[in-house]
Amino acid sequence: MTTLKLTTWNVNSLNVRLPQVIQWLQANPVDVLCLQELKIPDERFPIEALQEIGYQAVWAGQKTYNGVALISRTQGYDVQRNIPDFDDHQQRIIAATYDTSAGPVRVISAYCPNGQDLESDKYTYKLAWFEALYQWLSTEIQKYPHLAILGDYNIAPTDADVHDPAKWQNVVLVSEPERAALNKLLSLGLHDAYRLFEQNGSPFTWWDYRRFAFRRDAGLRIDHALLSDSLKEFCVACEIDREPRTWEQPSDHTPVTAVLQLP
Image (cartoon, rainbow, N blue to C red; front, top):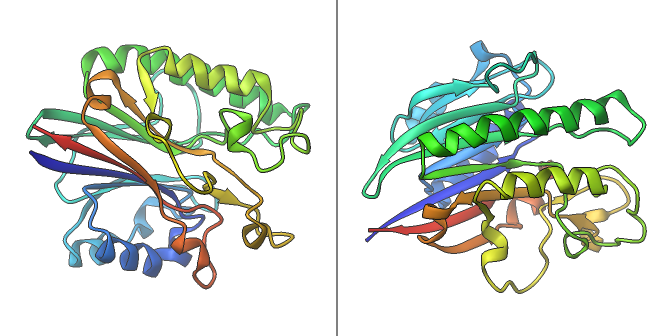
């Protein structure tokens, strides 16, 4: 058996948090780290610094906003940037395939739109983006049965993933159309790795910088690792690492890792 560890982390500016990413990888040498919100253009991606600690990467950068990457111990191939046939200048998807003892595994890093508020054009865009993602994944999962899509989904799946459901009622990130969009992805044969196991402690992965939200544990679980049917059978754990959120000048998100035992 071999262990495959897949992690997602919205770093909210790789330029600011590269030292934290390197520190975390050295302490937690996962196989693939899916990053979101790089907020740097392609030419400023710090590939040399990552190669110095034994990692490769593929990325889709964007100045100031968005941006995604796959940082991996081995080089990925069949790289796809963004959703095919969906006209979008925002860099939100990067996919690559990795050879493993169980065969090729397709890994996707996704930075899903926030939506801003229910009356915003950005909310309309969010729902359209999720529909395009669904259409693409419906073919992608046929081509790559071993598929994992990890990222910041900007959706808390249920009230159990919200610190105060009454406060968040009819608010972006928890609205019924958003949850329906996420459930539609799951209908393709994808599984929320965190909910495969009985969990102890706080489930949250994001805490607002304001109002001492982390100190009060007033958070949401919006960062997810979704695994295809075949990968679900290999998954033995899904862990939220809260420690980076305690560091100085942290991201408002923290890493989530799915652990798989492959034959």
